[in-house]
Image (cartoon, rainbow, N blue to C red; front, side, top):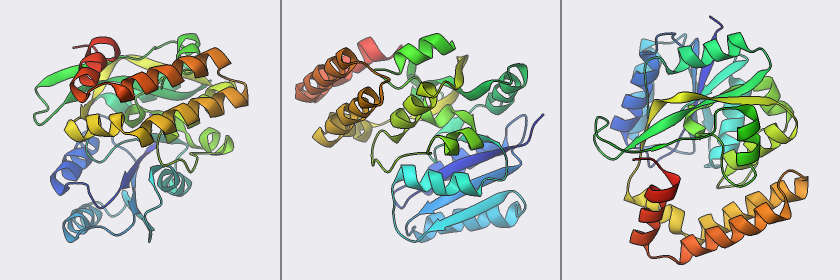
Length: 273
């Protein structure tokens, strides 16, 4: 099986216990990573520094801690980390989620079966406090053609699940400097350039959700950012004006909805429970 790197970005507000769970889930993969790259996106708490030091001392050949003195945001931090990954195959991972043990092995097998693949994601199961209590799932298209069409309006991947080829991601410009929706922008450019993609038809990651995530979705900043991202894809020639119009109206309506109604709409139409 081909060697792969894990890419994570860590910032000051992460909880140390969540970080530990995330790292442990990667150390429990049925096919272990050759490298775990963690970008320190700005100054961290002493507790987070202690966690990084602990794992770096336990696995000195595996852990590569990359430092950004200032907080530069997720997209630019991931670019920094990606450039420091020593393997062509890179698995994304968030510092508060939990990968199931067979996640990376199954993605590597997909790459092995189809050499043209550039990016492979999976479905996710969402939870609040207890990983064994699933509240919903985000199911995304699994074939390349369906992914290509879906991406014109919505993210066709669950970002923390993706495994991709480093050279292709950097070759199309990497993550943009957007503070939000960097993944939507990147995935659109990857697909527009003709690279092949797939999603495995099973949930292989437990995604940690909470009330703060709902509030961020409802923020005007997030609404404007998502609309602007789809506009970029329209101007690129990928999405059509109709896609941009539908997203603009839909995002604005969601922003104007009361939070409880917005949460209901998400669970009813955008998630499976």
